[in-house]
Length: 209
Ligand code: ATP
Image (tube, rainbow, N blue to C red; front, side, top):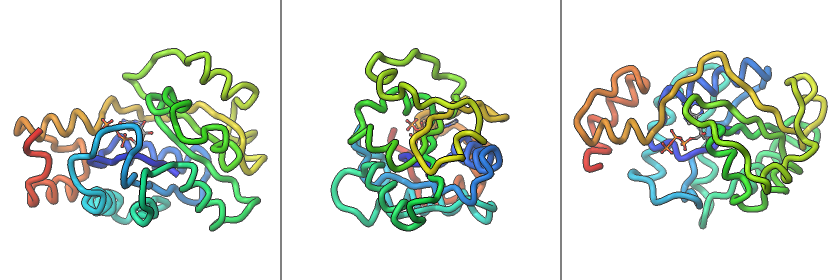
């Protein structure tokens, strides 16, 4: 699972998902837009629209799935609930992985039931070029004893481990930068899939900063 706001989806998300699929030999990567992200302001466009953009962005990419399950729940979108629902779907022995960028990982102790995340899944932290800060003592304590150094070791168990991954293509790209460009009327060509750009333009999304 790769959760996020996807406001909007961009090639940093999509290329990371493809390379994660390859690096861990996953069956599939569920990209799950948050309906109401608990730790940030209201997204600029509706969750339905963000899911529609995500579907367009994924297109027919093998192994990637646009997963709208958080849109069906009321209240804040907690990853722990999403993982519980995936665990129920795939069964107790399936290897489940929650992937997140290093920036999101640094805030993990603020998440809802962070300890429980490890009961449900492994965490895989994807290195992001612009995000380098050190871990807080609370985060170091949360992950103590969980870190492994290869996908092979991680995948020996269904959940509970932590792996830091540097994927082959690291893109210094964020949705914030894309929203800023759109608000300023600047080009976003090649930063997101063409179909996503077309829908953003057709619906005049992200125009008012
Ligand atoms: P924003 O700029 O609005 O905060 P974002 O581009 O960081 O958005 P999110 O939707 O918050 O995108 O990200 C979803 C997940 O994808 C997070 O775990 C985030 O760390 C990760 N991610 C986002 N952009 C990249 C990137 N360029 N490379 C690797 N991971 C990324």
